[in-house]
Image 1 (cartoon, helix red, strand yellow):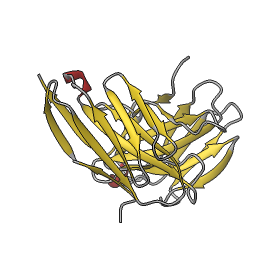
Image 2 (cartoon, one colour):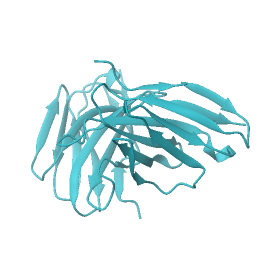
Image 3 (tube, helix red, strand yellow):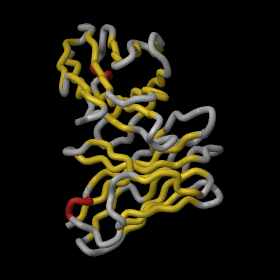
Length: 113
Length: 112
């Protein structure tokens, strides 16, 4: 069974631009969560989706948004990029009740210059 | 105050020298404690889930245990390929259903 895939793997953007990252979960998984990883803050929760509904959102500004499609694929968008948004963005998928185990993709490395 | 604290931050072991990594948590209503391994530039790789105090799980040279306020990841006779950052995370009531709250990790280096 294929794992979680994320595209693109690497991205370089300029301050003020916006970016869209994509995540395809493991086949059959209905939940997708997004995390930001930086050397200083570690892994921080962004948001989680289940059946196209955002169930929970972390403590990030409104510039960070996401959505989930009917096939469980998910996208996250960051508008008006800042230098501090440079990070590894990780997507994780979960089968759903009764399993809450999350499996991570390889991540998208975003660099903002 | 951090909800999940891992110690030590870094650990250097000689090949074959067994040791333990610690993960302590302060959240209430624990639903699950997760261990992941992360190699540089890659996403975390799932290792174990523990749900209740007293539970233990093993995989090759790794054994994870859980008490009411902490978890240990025991590494027996480690090999250089065990070098990685080990992350601990919790799911708890009061947070999102699938939301993981992570510790900062323990970077393990195993020297041949």
